[in-house]
Image (cartoon, rainbow, N blue to C red; front, side):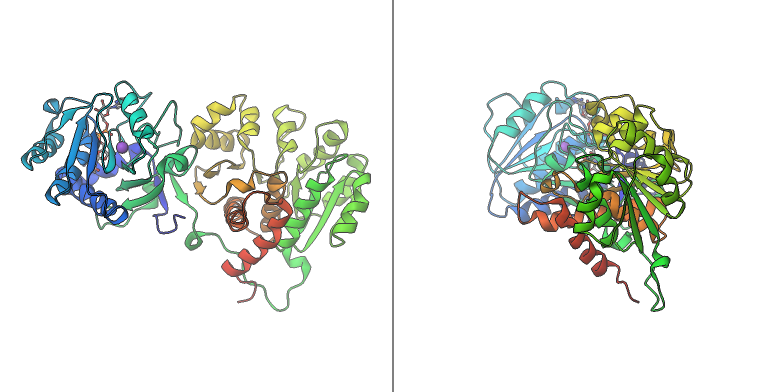
Length: 495
Ligand SMILES: NC(=O)C1=CN([C@@H]2O[C@H](COP(=O)(O)OP(=O)(O)OC[C@H]3O[C@@H](n4cnc5c(N)ncnc54)[C@H](O)[C@@H]3O)[C@@H](O)[C@H]2O)[C@H](O)CC1
Ligand SMILES: [K+]
């Protein structure tokens, strides 16, 4: 996966600002373009050394200019090159005009793109980069369709054309690349939403030596080198040092969800785990996990006593939304201890059947729950994931873990992280309940709400990848053991 990529993630506008700063500080834009073209050509040749030919689709801006320069490099290396332009290059200005002239100077004869032109070798998508906005206009849309229908390798320059670099959203169509080489700043949209499906593998070229300043970026990508850590355990430790998690959930018939959350909290190191659930779930939980202090509760009364002993609450797994659910969740809302709310807890909050908790808390909505919480719809949420996560965080005063490809973690103070880990095999019942338990255990072991959400997301996603290697049929209850091993390998229990 992408662990060698930079940690800072940028919007297109932030990259353009970085660009401008580099140019102001003396590096010419044309020089940056040459560096970009050389980096792209180097990656392309490494990946397809025997392709022997290039077909470049050039747009009407500097992304197109990159394409002209890449074509020049290929031409000089003896590869036959076809360049098809989507905007009249004679109208290009500044550096882009210079790039076009350079291509012509190497004997390239760019032609206007039209449907049915012949594609050979490796296809280079230099149509749209950070200057793309709105919906892909014609004839770009048809050119993208032709690129996507050819069975040749496709390299996207900076961004797959048609992909929104800030949100990872694709409105109609975008280039489906085998490889994306992106420059100066890694764009957030390449790693979230539709981005991973369109980028193929991602390579990054900084083009300059200057280290990146995270303050300039929109988000930080989570990787082993920047993950939050639990403190090593003293030999004199006892279970009270590692917190008492109370899971509130498990309506009739959904006790398994509450059990999985409890099991995950256990496997992630919480000192004690209690579970407040429907009485009918008590026996099966005890049978499976005697370590979990399970109590059958009919309504809020008994939950209050349990909640008073808990350091952390995990609310929602298998909770349901009926009268019993509304009664027991009201206890959580009244408590000040750190909490993680998921699933039906969020649905009850969205329907205003309960108020949000009083203390620090984390919500872990999937896009559907986020839509309900924002009175919106899934398509809208997915079209602006970063903004949706941020809006939820501000509105509810919570750390928001917005699930979906490229999980986003947003804090009310504006911090944002992205977890690129995960696997399609994790699309299985219970995976979310396990995440809730993991996060609760990390809160119980004294991580902050933002750090617990970040580390929890990463452990969960990475464990899913490891188990996903065995294909479909990943059972959510397989995750906690793998998470436990991952945690130990990344953050050893003893000094
Ligand atoms: N020093 C630099 O600037 C460097 C830039 N790099 C490359 O340049 C692009 C950004 O170039 P820019 O000219 O700002 O924009 P684009 O080329 O991405 O796009 C502008 C181009 O696209 C047309 N357009 C915009 N939206 C649409 C749409 N919805 N449908 C159709 N056409 C659209 C617009 O009319 C213009 O013609 C950056 O990505 C890099 O590739 C260098 O790599 C580094 C130095
Ligand atoms: K592009």
